[in-house]
Image (tube, rainbow, N blue to C red; front, side):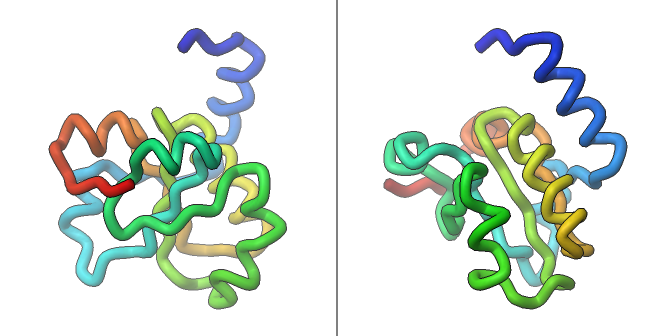
Amino acid sequence: MDHSLDFLALVDDAKTRIRQISIDDWLAQKPKPLLIDVREDDEWRAGHAASAEHLGKGVIERDICERVPNKSEKLVLYCGGGFRSALAADALQRMGYTEVRSLVGGYKAWLASNLPTEK
């Protein structure tokens, strides 16, 4: 998918404030941080990372406090390629979440690493 320059500028700006994590670094984490899929509902239904929870980018700010009340819990957000998750991570940090990361490469990187998925 081709992204507009304005969207890419917005993502690049968010990435200056957030922390990202690679698949390898996520795999090395013990215990594993909570993995949250921020993609749209239809993307989630088509397939997602095993053990992930779904909180779409459109509702994550509204629902995160109820689902994850501990603002110091380790969270790793992913989307299709790492753009929307960067924006969502930036928003959660502004809400006070201190241990949120965006997964570099998103679900595409997950699939390329042959990690488990489910529908």
